[in-house]
Length: 204
Ligand SMILES: [Fe+2]
Image (cartoon, rainbow, N blue to C red; front, side, top):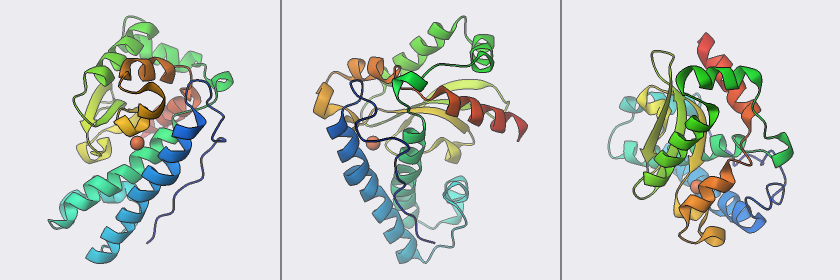
């Protein structure tokens, strides 16, 4: 099985002014492409049987070391970026539905309180990694962070939303000001995608 870099669900400039065209283009065509290529190399080198990227990341113990590290890094990089792009939408489409708001407000005091906790987790994350809204094994919403390219699927979670806090995701526009990147992100969240993922995860 060979993986292909997915086409973005929007134009490179569609997230302006919150996420600039140059960063989106480099992030997709250079960084995401490199993870895709390196994942394919790891699969070929190890002659690994793969049915899907999700299955691969949920069953890392079936991949022998040291190949497993390459699958974690590049398989995670491939999946996490697919998931990240699908978590974003142009600002005019970025409004949470009643279902999603109610689900969030069952867990947090308010929708803003959820955003504050997610933002704090993303800001406090040390080094490269990701902030996530996930559904845990008890079907409860939870905010987590993962290091480098570790994917929540490998930890038993169902991912619902993610934010890339690797410097490559924001440095060109925001330099070292991660807090500004996080604030911009909330304008371009694809809430419809989160709701779809949540509904699917709740029925699994
Ligand atoms: Fe990235």
